[in-house]
Image 1 (cartoon, one colour):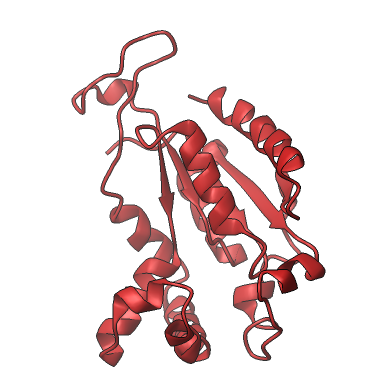
Image 2: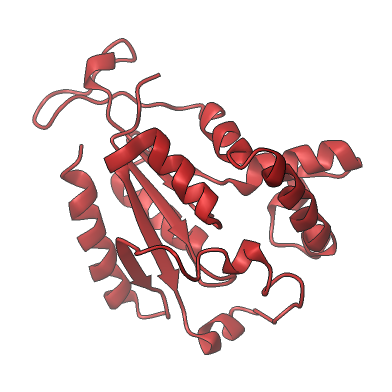
Length: 209
């Protein structure tokens, strides 16, 4: 499997709109070029297996997930302490669609055209310095860090409520410092502003393809 030409590591607080921004990027680049990866997916799948829970219900924004959130955070931290790159490595190995495309101005190649491989991975839930370090170690200059921000008022309108042990845990605060983000996307509900910011980011990404 050839390496992606661009890897966007999205991070941000709960209800900042990371998933929305990730899906906007995927939609604008096209599913033939871009896939969205969620580090929380292999975590939740393994947690569900070990605890006899419904994996699919842990994936959505339901009260079911919130019931187990704090214990999942604790469990995930134990796994990371033992192997900091565990979930990063697992989610990359699970990519089902390395999409091969050819260079600018040429027709799309088939899967056999490995020398022309180019696609974009958007990681929608980067949370820790160890996540950023792992992707940079593996993919080097292909990696760009993207911080999605929204005001507390906006997040409250999206039903965010501070939860002790969640919003003050490393899973929410691990990238509050220590990273000079390549891009900061403000997602406060101004569609025109968001569109301009995304297009600037996409222009940079397309230059790598």
